[in-house]
Length: 172
Image 1 (cartoon, rainbow, N blue to C red):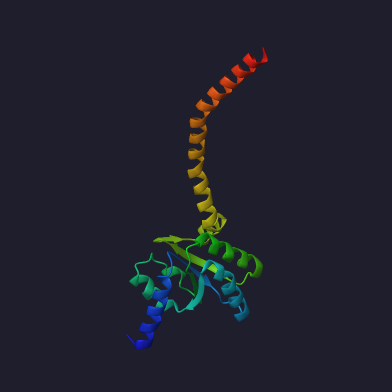
Image 2: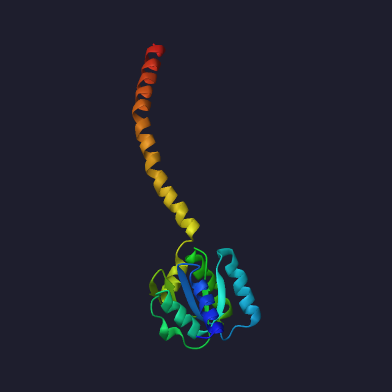
């Protein structure tokens, strides 16, 4: 294998290793300004947009034992990788597609599972990672708060009875 081809494959493999997801897209209708805007929108999620050669992506995907996405490697291909917030990245892509209609999602790989564009749309509807963490924290705190109220109920009831008794005795 030629040194430059090996370098390209290693570069693509490096991109694929950055996250547990990769999204493949056809970018042929995008202008340089569109690519720059999409990259800017992906930055807060620490995601990256890279144009890759299909042959390099195929070899790198096989080397990393990713699910087979050979059928999606037709036409110009870009990959979106990076970050840990795959629902946030899917939302950015969905919004960008609705606005510009210049990029077409082919497939994605999440973990070791191949996902279709419809699955990516459902992923975009999921809450962000921060929102999920907040919801989990709320669920974990709820039983503790209820437990404290139950423990506090018995002494509070006794105090209420004694207070009522003091009022009745003190009122006579």
